[in-house]
Length: 541
Image (tube, rainbow, N blue to C red):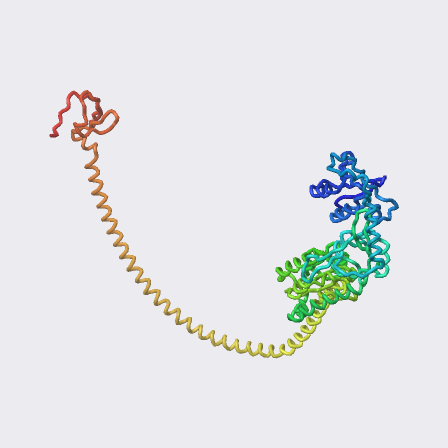
């Protein structure tokens, strides 16, 4: 519920309450005489504007108190009080003619009453009119229904003409008793063409021209619906699609189930409960859709497309709906929906809860009367497949046993012959292997003796070569040791030479690196001495 509309105790104002929404505030501000009550946090609108308030706010699903429809229908027992007269001086409100106060005038209610009486005199008898019902479902559950009847050009969504319609509670109750309830009943709803017996009227309080329903011709609507179904079926037959989905093979077993229905419907609950009570383990995937109203078509087409894109993951697709009136069935008589089902890659099972009438989907897919009947069909199919499989297994086992008995004796004879042949063959092979073994042993001994002599000769040659390599290496090592001894600095010092170093330890091999008064270290064969350079003489050019 978006908000509520009530009548204040004195019948002067309508009290409008709702949670803050900018769009609703803008709508309320368009009502004449509207006033915000900050203490009670509600809007007050003069009761004389009840028709306009009802027309605007009913489209936004406001909840109206019981006295509002009665006030609207003129059956409340009181006349809405008009808003206070404007007392603004003439010089502030605008220019006024000098003789305006003396000119006779009608109040608005008087004027509307005169127009209403004129219409009633012009149309004293009720008359039949036809058109499409619009905005009927918005006031569902209310005593009085106010909607529109529109005329549309073929294949054009825009209305050529429209008229406001009032269906009061007493007439609605009488019609419902006549039409009955259940699957075979007729019911008004949006989107259907109807033929209504109406009386022309004008509601004085709002000045709204309307027609008041006296009777409904259900045969007109049902005939139109039947004609629409036949046109769709004829087009399917012309394109060779009427039996396309029916002709698909039913998978055995069908355990992976796709379902298109409303999760809040009794049909879905009955379907699911019947599957759960069965001994079969089904894998069920539900894609929620609307099962009536203008949202049925887009949601059903989207669901069909979703399952078509994942057809490999499912065995069958079930479209379910739990009962309803005969006119509710017409929501499924849509050309786009019919062609989507006819071309669907999955086998489609339809159970939309009608005992007598058939929709287009019932004619082009596998049809069961109710969702429970669809579930029973699926359970019976799996149970039948299981029984058939068990019977086939029993027959196969019996045939296999007979065949085994027939061939057992033949196999025994073959086995005995095979054993005798194998024994003879093994004896012959044993003798041949014994003879071959003796020859192989003699040849092996001869070959081993030859190879042993070759190995001994190769070992002697290898030992001689290794000894020569060792002798040559020993001579080279002795030569290198002699050269090392000759180059040893200690031996050079022993022959009377000295080694001069700087105080940092670096060798000074040339006089050019010496400087006067430089301190140097002189190493002899038996010790070291520190010396100071007195003079440096270089023999270099």
